[in-house]
Image 1 (cartoon, rainbow, N blue to C red):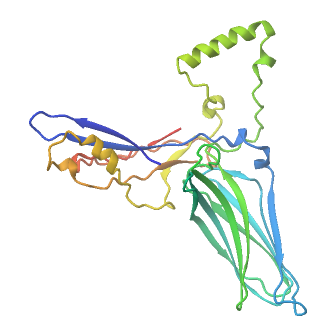
Image 2: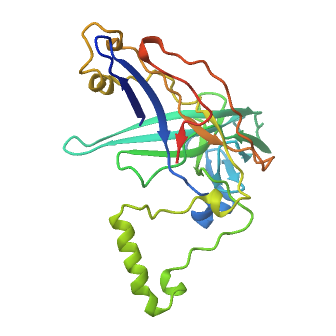
Image 3: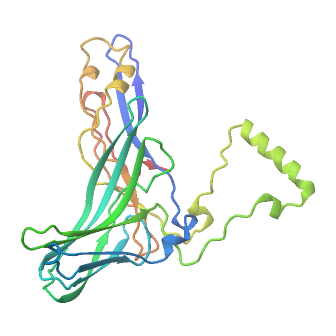
Length: 320
């Protein structure tokens, strides 16, 4: 999903000039206001055997664990993999991935589902010999990426998972584990935030009607009643910088429909009618939790006006 701002200069007796600016809108996902299960360690394990009865081997057990379930871009996910190989088949190597899974849903009458997978981080460890037990630790740094999204959109869902795979020798199939994690846009803090109290707990009964009148007036004027800005509520929360999501496909985004609407009144044969692709890299917040005070680095970019098109990348083209 992309958003585009178009500015059109109408010049009498001259070709009109069109300038486009792309930006991204994402939700503020505060991990502190999500489920408390994001703070506790998580683990998943499984085992498998090779061959069939009566030649069935002893099990190959594998356990995957992380210290918590919620992370933000720029944070490191410490992954622990424990392999107990009691079988007679050696494990050649252990591969751990941080994967982004995007699911697309089409609505009836042609309901269908499509899934895309993006490998964000991949690391490989050593193997495990037969009748041995080995523990491997991996550090997966979360790159710039959009937050987890399951309940905002009915046709697109974004999820993340840590995957571990043990590749064994011979013609046997390997063993794999999957653990879902949550990627947010506000990191977890050490102190638990209290849930906001309801008006019935704060205001006496005789003031509830007056408060309701204020709400009705704000709804009529279209004032937003959303959650407050987490950084305004807690100044100790680290501020993010912004970087491009390099693991997502970098194919040029063509806004042919938007360009046609903005060029209806332009003269035939003008330069604005060229079907030039608008290349846009969305920027997402990245945190440096080793230093709580982050300063946004301002970059100077050249202004590109080829064919009336501006792609001036600034330090922030993402809005919450």
